[in-house]
Image (cartoon, rainbow, N blue to C red; front, side, top):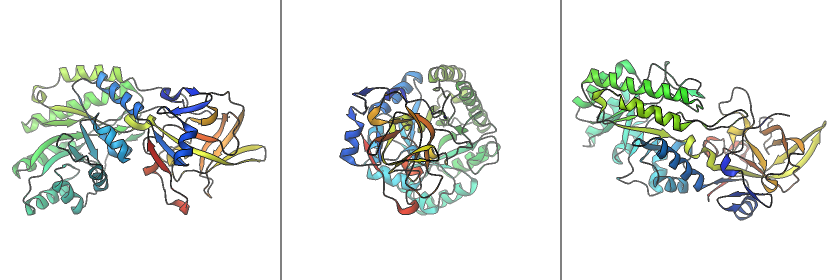
Amino acid sequence: MKAMGPLPADFAVATQGVMILGGQRAVELVEAYGAPLFVYDRDVIAGQARRFREAFAGIGLHYAVKANPMPDLLRHMAGMVDGFDLASSGELATVSKAGLLRSDLPLSFAGPGKSDADLATALANDVCVHVESEGELERLLAIAAAGGRRAKVGVRVNPPFGLKGSGMKMGGLASQFGVDHERVPALVRRIVEAGAEWRGLHVYAGSQSLSAEAVIEMQRATVALAGDIAAELGLTPPEVNLGGGFGIPYFAGDKPLDIAAVGAALAETLAARPAILRDTKFVIELGRWLVGECGVYLTRVVDRKVSRGKTFLVVDGGLHHMLAASGNFGQLLRRNYPVAVANRFGAEPEEEVSVVGCLCTPLDLLADEVMLPRAEVGDVIAIFCAGAYGLTASPQAFLSQGAAREVLV
């Protein structure tokens, strides 16, 4: 038997043994929309946003669209955040189609490899571009001049530190992300001299940390770095994006990040910040932490088989929809996401099974040797923590299998 991650607390309820999502029975959602199905619970998202506001008074909250760009979810999110952070012009198009190009919802665009078309689209839509290199800045300035526009420009900084213990380190090393911190002052001077609007600094040092101490240390270092850059420039950055890095529990032994401790420490850090940052607005950019636990992937059992004494539940979904649960999206050692039988939710485990998808590859393993209540053909398997980097982070065209559906409840 192998352990699985903890069930998110928001779903630890059931009616007559059937899991409830957004006030609706999981099985009825599958009957209404079909399977495989991603279900996103709007109340879970609202709860996370509320927890953030309670812990981080006075700090702006931006949503990282890359975590989950589902249009209905974006519209729901728009009422709870102070801006959207984009990673592609495709995300900008999604935001636009969702009717969210609004003056009260500022947009920023970060990421390496922005094409000239990307930059022109950002300029045309009044998006602040977080430049990742000197060359990207020069292309942006040239496109702005040719179109008679004034660019809004932030500088993404490659800091001399990373987020300790993070799932993905994005600072403290040579990187395609951001401008090395010692070169940032010269780049900002170029922005100002060119007549562009300098919007501030963006520092993202890592992601998926459950250590309050590590996040606190990273935020202290980020504020200090912003102060050093500002002092060298003699200019106050209008905004400093502190990045995110807040993780969620996926695996056995994981504990939720103590955001109350992080918020209290950040308040102390900002109270003692350098005078040159007194008028700077600070924001935190979150994706996974806001939406990761709101999502559940529901997939039906289509076959139950025993091979050499091992029981397999074969489902109609797979890694082409939920790559992360298969262990093929950033895991060094494969571990099990939290899993349940949705129509026997809360029942005692009875047997050790492996949940496998419908693809012709042994990589299509959604749960490996976990203890579950007995499940039969037609029952519904629920895979949790599916709200972030789920469907759009998966190879949906692999083996030309059917598409998954999505619904916000």
